[in-house]
Image (cartoon, rainbow, N blue to C red; front, side, top):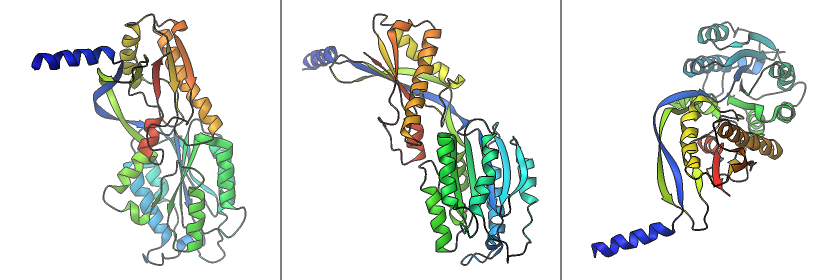
Length: 352
């Protein structure tokens, strides 16, 4: 009986094509998901009023939240700044992120101002901020702290939409809500609905245990494998003769460059390609669902191209490799979650 089972397993193994999945063991390492972040605080008259249910001035709640957020943002090489609107004012010009400098800038904000005749041109504030965003390189997280009320100037939702149209995947607007009126919350919700990249939060939710740390992970950085030890593990796939090499090669938001953390994984993938020098491969790039379809198509092509260039530079014959981009059309994970979007920013290799 034991011999028969052994023969059966050998026979089964003979007809299976193998997929190589790479299991990694590593310590956690923080890698930034954005290059720049901007704190953008509403200093309008309504923010100087007490919150209807929490009985605290909303501007004080916002400053408390900003200081708490500043404490949990990791000291990565972000470009950071702090601006106010209603009226528009620069408190910290863009520069290398420094916790102490940001804390001092937040602490310098005046909260003792007149409520009356201090209207809220939120849309105009976004217009004023546009040149600041234009001067930044890479991807930007814009974190707005507001009660959402806007009663003067340009439509804030239309202006936020215009910023997305101009900067695409290079910008994500996050709104921390201090709303205590339905109208203000509606404007906040409409801004959030413009992109799936936004992370939803308000004062109360961020005071829950561990919530601020999670918010920082969702907006500012990811934990990735540090110097992974990669072990190929065989698993059965279809019997159509194709072999897929999947591995932990996930890109940051709007990123396509090969990083140092990716090299050990790529080296293991190359070993498998070298074992069958007559085989040709398709390098497939993918994105998450954030941003326009056309932009994501180009981004996926750049990701696939980066892996192909690395392989060729490291000795794989260029005639064996074809790179293709599939944009956001082939997700493996849930794009409704930040973790799912991160995992969908990937590259895979398949035999032709």
